Length: 95
Length: 476
Image (cartoon, rainbow over all chains, first blue to last red; front, side):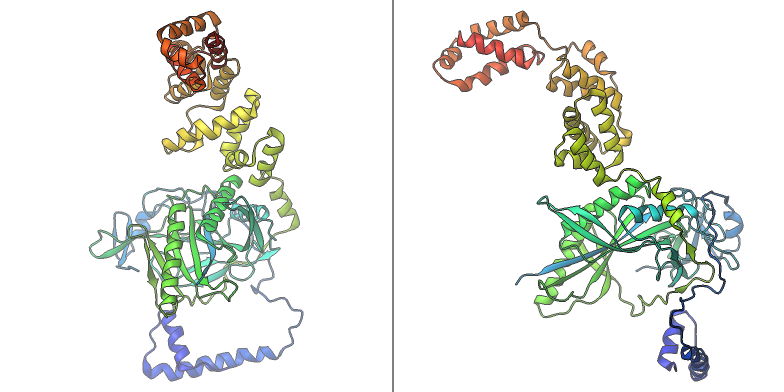
């Protein structure tokens, strides 16, 4: 299975990654190679095999519903680019 | 040409947990910004989400109430998109294998018929933070206190055919969520919100293209938003256009929906299983443990009220809209021993006064015990039903108990026949003309005499005694 340049561009845009035009062909080739490798797994007969959701053969441990955290806002916000009135500020977003 | 509307709803119910779905931060509403957002909620590198047991139990609770299959094995997935109020760059949700599978709920239509609405699934996910767009020198302020609050997204089948059915479904689910204690259902605080998928088609034809209306947070808006969207789509099709699949936002001020996201990739979420979370296993024993704590459900309660208290379906459904109202009614019915009287008062004076004051039953100033005392005074003929309403209003205003108010205001009903006779004699003496007319066959004037007598006794005459004496005297 190969991936097209258009698909690489789309995936990059969705992941907010900049792919320069002169690197596009190399990315496409490398990703196609990986996909081709993964594709070989399709040759295996998986009839009756339950799809795996996680490589560890364990079940999720659950947490009791207890508040264990206190506020460390000052500490966290000391590394934020900009804050005001306790809010993190980001470039304006409007739908 | 006739059009048929097709509606499916996605409802987000915030779950009643103390801590977040994947972290130990508090979920309490209204805290100072970002004081309930820890490293996990902020999406810092190297942190691990750990699932909240209570969130799983509450999801199972809702699932059992809608007769759904609870998945023995359920997995979490990442829903990938970029928005500043979602700091990880993805939302932890469920895609394949949601915790709650296919279920259903019956709604009551306006004509009294029952309609079954399918519920496709319900899955656990985390809420996003809040974006504040005003007043930050052209920047957006982000409060992540809500980020990571547990939500149950309940997705219906496209089974509703008009806005009223959608409202009936939403109200019923809202009541159910509160009954079960799954969530507080507070719509102002966003604990219960709804997205509506709306399309139109010729009756019997394939489904039309749908638009999704986002974030409807009141029963009134959802009905209006759907009706407007239906009109908009019909206009487009009838003038030769095509409905585009998109997300639209309802603007209650302008009473219209407008396009919200038209970015071509907006719905490409690239879900994949979250490697930070293992599959969740739910055993039959876990399910039975939750089932053992389930309260009586609204429909079962309604049937029981009809059977046990001989109430009409109408009275019973009003009384079972919320668990608090149902409990209040039952306390009053058992305390006064007359369920019909109790139902009339709870559905009448009590709910009317609550509505007038925009209050919920939880805050009712007249306790069930206080109301029982008042109803007993009706039953023993101390006051008439009409005077009792005045006493109730005084009780509501904190003027004291029923007996204290009746006593203080001298509202005790006059059952002493000689006192009533004296009043009537005086009225007959003062209105010779009307008396003559009545006696010559103008029966309707009876009401006039009752009115006069009631006024003269300041409403305190026992109505039955008054009627009897008046009739005797007038027959003369």
